[in-house]
Image (cartoon, rainbow, N blue to C red; front, side, top):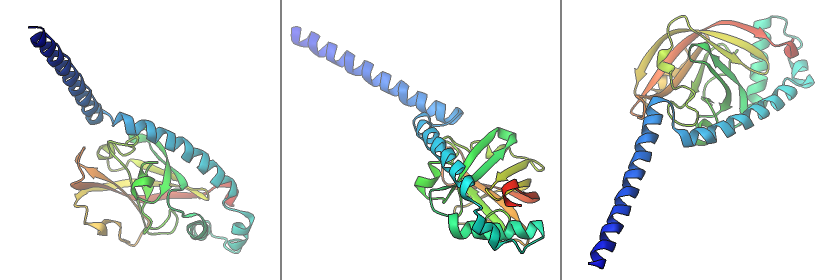
Length: 232
């Protein structure tokens, strides 16, 4: 009888433990689907804080006096931005490092941009496709971001509408892009970041939520660009 009671008690404890664990899992999934994955978001917050500090240091050193001398002969503002972007790509495009900032008012995004789209880089924030141009170089710029993990910066990428503005701040200039359209593509459709004859910004994220079977891509055209005060 005592053995039966002990066994019954053990089974009751086990069932309670399993139910509790199940509730935790369901809560985690629910939070992820409704908002973003909580554990990785804490890690992402730490990494974004470090990235902001790193960006502040970058903005102090670029453009340097030497960088400005290299472009001092360029008088046209757009051409000077392009020349500084080229210098920036040459000297500051290091994988995993902060390179700028992206702001999207439509879904209240203000995040530090990271160079690279590898796993470690995207854990820190939206990542710049290394095989695409930098803002100001007159061609296609690609940026990827998570939708459910690591702060989920592109969680609501599908809410962007034609005419919405996307702001990019680089150490040498500020840019505004206007959303044109969107497409849902296969991960293999890398041609979405091919040059198209004008400066275009392409944002990408996994689609649908909680899946990597497709990509949600937003296309935006350059509306305006302005040299920063330290680059004039």
